[in-house]
Length: 284
Image 1: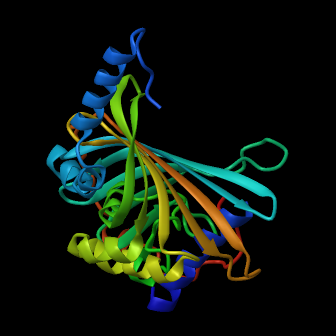
Image 2: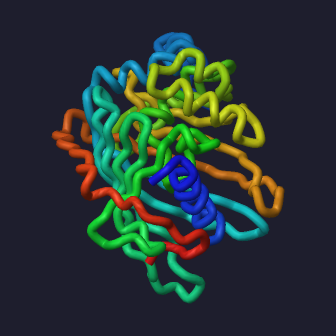
């Protein structure tokens, strides 16, 4: 598949996605003291968020669940994914479920996605692709840096966006999946994130900074006491190329089961589809 076909594949995936306060105790003194101690223990919010991606690399791997909500023209759809991620090698495997059709019946088979440095691989892509073949999309061809194209946000790329945090505040204690976490709220800048990202994510994040309607990414991040991301909700905005209207995307990533085995193998060259992909045919 040549570069134009890679770009067409990424555009088609995106087009399918579019179509389709802390409490106080009984005595003010003790409550205020506990709250102050908790804020102190949280440390500098911006520094904690800048370290989040490195902390995930130290954790090695985890399970991941994702959801991506898109809103355009009064229509809202949600794409969900679930799988595992190897942070040290930046490899992920997710099963992505597309939205139901308007009648409520599911008409699309789940898509298997492999996330790798510089590439996105998809199986059960549809659009004329043989069932036993993978579609490869070059990340360099995507104007959003693969933050939304695949219907999921690469968990490590999402964490690297936090390297661009300019402002953040500690909201308070919360719970995610039975784990106590610290909730931070802030805004990251994709251009800044690209400057401080790992080598593999610099170019994609720089492309996203130019490709989105705005380089600013509001977020809510929930970190456990080890500084690992347990939940991350980010808001992206891009312009629909056909209608020139802004599309709002809310991406939520849940990470759990740290240290789980993550044996992810990329497809062989012979298993990658090299033909033309239908432009407007949705996956089936």
